[in-house]
Image 1 (cartoon, one colour):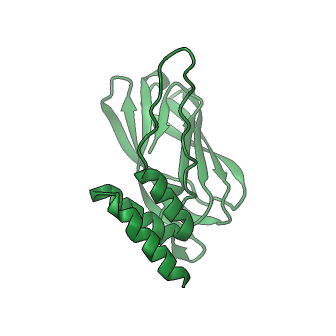
Image 2 (image 1 turned 60 degrees about the vertical axis):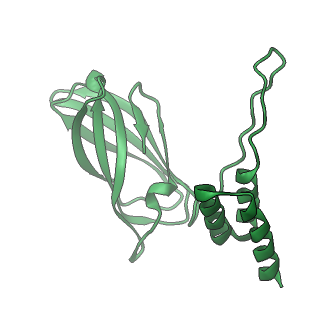
Image 3 (image 1 turned 90 degrees about the vertical axis):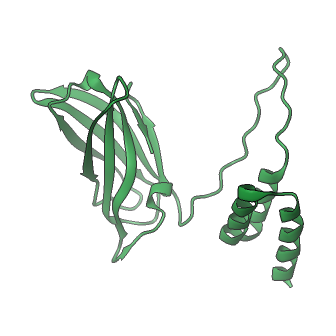
Amino acid sequence: MQQQGVCSGLSALMVGMRGRTAIAGLAAVIAFGAAGEALAQAAAAPAPVTSNGPDAQAPTVPAAAPSAGGEAVGLELNKLEPVSNGCRAYLVVNNKSGRTYTALKLDLVMFQTDGVIGRRFALDLAPVKSGKTSVKLFDLDGVKCDEVGSLLINDIMDCKAGAGEEAGCLERLTVASRTKAQLSK
């Protein structure tokens, strides 16, 4: 009976949605059940009208759905430090999940301050222990720190927890930076 109720609610929801919005709504219901149906309904609802006047309040943003497969792994570009042969980057890794990653290799792209790609490289963060915060260092040889505009996590090259491959690793990453160079995904 529960399944029939979700399906009839989904049918009513899909009537008001079109194209990609409908597909996203369906994916939310499949992934998160009743909670996904509520998210899909919120996404289908018209955006609230806001005022720019002096009494206007900042619009509220609905809370994001939990990432598929568990809690996030936070990556923070904490510091860029000049060294004799280039620039040393300090990356704080905060594994809030219940997984220990035996492999976590990032495909990183460094953009210069003018927006031009400076280089592309792989960065292996493993092992990343469950519930642990750690600091990983890497050197950008031949690059001055003030030439680093941003770092892009282009993709995940390898992601394993325990004995098997993990899906959704890029989605589970959260990124931040304490430097003038931004970290994004």
